[in-house]
Length: 338
Image (cartoon, rainbow, N blue to C red; front, side):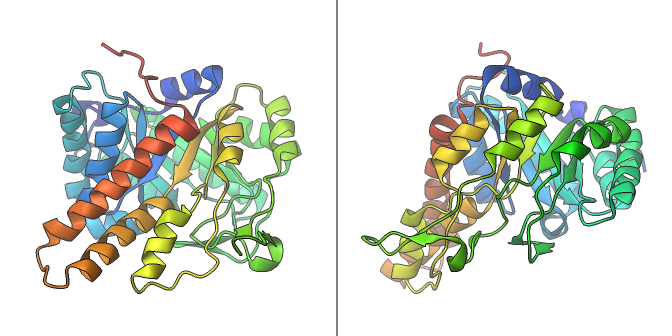
């Protein structure tokens, strides 16, 4: 099979946008998508606000959508952004949590402009070896590679871990140098899913009864920045789990007790450091589910997916716009704003 050049699809890799983000004290939004409504909402928000954006696809989402369709969805996303008046969009199609060389190679071959190889569950030397193998292949085609040191707790798609293991700052220079990665995902207390912390890890607000999560380990982030000044750092598991959407879901038949995420003020602080990519997935799932549940509860006669998915799309667009402007600071950060 001929290798698909991502540049011919109108996509870009992460290298230049990460440089600007690190130097400018903002972060690129990395939004996972699984369906057309999510993709539409992501592009509408990012194009309207002139923000670079990373379209993230997990292994499971890739299987769900089909690799060939995904390639054309990526090209279509670029064309849609231009249709919305964004003349020079910066759209990355990125594999999230690739778990093998073969999967990463397949994504490179099929037009992805960035891939992540997650060897964080492997012994240290095996993680380096696997990551370097992916880097050596991807860099032949200009595809950027994200590696991971440290383990995030939680469950999201195929990624699952009972306990988190913070990144060891003393390992980052050796890992990045020997593997050749373009960016590094670290573990400083974020976690996957809508239940990022157990109740016993949190305090509870006496007025609202809602959980207040523990702070992120910014001391570890500061140490990593000292050892790798200017190197692109990535935060996974960074959904804030908006209570607005959790409340709507629970009001209309859902059951998400004690769902809690990362406070947005901590993400704002991280975005002003060397953290130049922040991954957000669960917030979109919650917004979508809230829109569908609310609409069907109010209109049980509906059976046209456009009616309930349309509301879900509006909720997601609103959420993405908020993240871009009020949390990540990536609005009006395209290289070319003409």
